[in-house]
Length: 338
Image 1 (tube, helix red, strand yellow):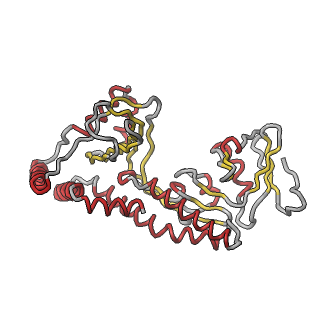
Image 2 (cartoon, rainbow, N blue to C red; image 1 turned 180 degrees about the vertical axis):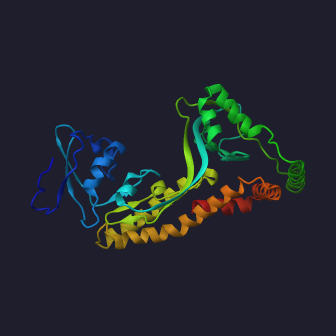
């Protein structure tokens, strides 16, 4: 459907029809923040909204009877690493596949767990790290990075078998060389004697939330630019990192904060929200942090997937010492959350 916009607007109007079927973006909208557009809606709407030489459009949609008008001044692509917004922008996206998968699930912890659920737990296994991230007193989110074959096996397990596999992954001894075991034993003894610190076990898992288990491929990704005329990318749509350091969500939060600041400054100055000249400030600020974290996580992924014995010993000792030094842990956490 194509209809001329009101004469007072002087905007170009484009047809956004996809076989005559539409869904109201208002179903996922918040009046204070504009429209959150559903994924099934993007493919038809985006070509109508995005054009590098026009500021914005008045788009007419049927859903199925009333006419819905979306006046788009600015678009934010927050639609993940397979971003349709990024593809519509036509920008390049650099990627590296790790040949691993991340198995995720929401887990219920045992009620008699001896530790409070306020700590994120991570253990590095030969196939990749496994992590428990606290959600509330008795619920945690699982991210288990492993081989493709092992991920497929984990997805096929029933609930009880999967919970048993998670508990074993956190508690069972890992087969290592005698040399590495001896080095770690000496380090643990030294830490215990000097500080009295004990190494607590991760909380036991009792069950998984039904239908919460899933898997996704792991890899590195970074787009050639975050911004275009009237559009910008945030989160995994712009950059993708390995989950081993838990930095993906922090990078996304940082993107949102910086973009909000840039748009607020542009609004106060009476400038257009979607101009590249203003949006580039967001890109420049985020590149300084995002690229550093991306390279660090990529290096850690390579470090923890090697079987070279001296490297295995050094990384094990380094991680153990870091865990035993609160000032170092605090510094790393503050940097990660900055």
